[in-house]
Image (cartoon, rainbow, N blue to C red; front, top):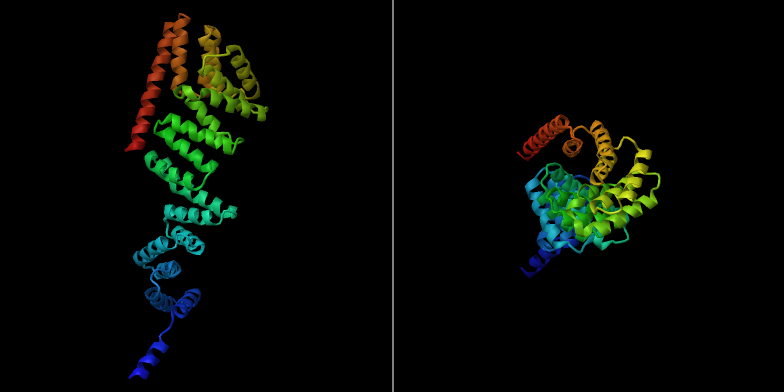
Length: 338
């Protein structure tokens, strides 16, 4: 009796034997054998994350998605400090279309192998892929929740900080948006997008204007052949109502490089209006309206300038255009939010 029991125990495969047999079966796509052997290994070592991630792959190939997801989640809980488990989970979740979970696993893996720049770049890409549909659908709060976590895990990511700034901007959290865009600039000063976004809401961030102006000046100095640096610098000066002559020269320089930029003509028109040069203001604003006829702000400015010039019919026409454009924009926004 004792001898029979001893022989039975000796015949039972060990964890290593079951695990190895399961992996080999998975490799040759013998899924039934893989499931059987890996299941046996999981019973012998239920806290081994590598077994569970291999089971997840097996179940996924067997098209048992529920069992696969449960095994993957079990592996994620057990293998947070195991690079092999995390890298395999990132692949599994990507193939399963669970992009956010793939990003989280890849970010954790990246944290364990900090010298692997490709791993970090992949984590950034996965996070961006996870939030891009949310940004497109204007689900900004959901995007902020993900990106706040992502930028904590992946420090100094220009791509993720920029996306976070866009999400904050979408919720009108302007100071936080400015902070994210300024961090983007600190990481990647040659990237134009964060400067352009900052230029859209200067009036909403008065306490940030000195810092933003400094960033614009740096971009202008580093890119003397670009019209954008000059117009952004001028916008910052106009937002503070300072140095009107310098702002004028900057805008004229910008226009000399790119005469098709409606924003430069608009900004110069606004400057001329502020300095009571109404005829010149009307000239620049008409150019801006011709280049970008769908911008309500240009028509609103023009209506005010025409009033100053004693042209009530022209002012009325511009106010009507402004009202129609605002109504159309509001209708489009309502349609998106349905």
